[in-house]
Length: 285
Image (tube, rainbow, N blue to C red; front, side, top):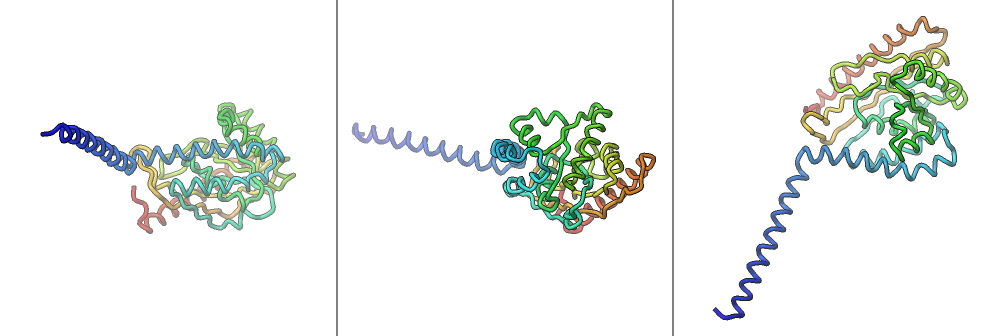
């Protein structure tokens, strides 16, 4: 074999190895991104990274009208973007109930950090809303600062007395702007899937003190997310607004009865939505 043939056989052999290795890595990469676990973490990462990035944009926007309950209508475009990326479709039912120009307390069941996307989806229905969050969230800057400027109220959930007083202080804001307080009274994410956690009393104290109605909203189950199996598929979420529960004439002596009434009606509709999803044959976990 000539010198030229030896040199070229070496080059061809090494070039073949190079492309073989590249192809192998490409196939491995394609396999990995198709795995359930990768998609699970990827979608959560997208949610968090886009939220933090958008917060930097919203800070100067909210500075122009700080703590204004109308800021809630501005966050829907980002929520729509995130929902498309992670594959969640939202359906709002009876949204006209939330559109009435009056103060109220929106009570929702809490299952996932993606519940915030649902709040953003109903934001244009509300026009004016005040969200409640635990105080630790404020320190996750830039998101915490953006949320505070946007009008969010942060409470210390480990100090019931202080938390209740903070909530009661929002009564004047709700009446002034005819805004709606938005709170998840379970206090933490409920991953049970069969029932609702007991409701904390703060939101109901506000409703009675301000004499404004309770506006229950029920999220259907996140059937397409399984934290144990690390599965996050595409899915369809329903947010259903229920009939308002009036508080006119009620006193704090009626507090427990009001909580029980709200809890029971929300549990009933949660189970109905869960059954509906099963009937549509998309409840696949």
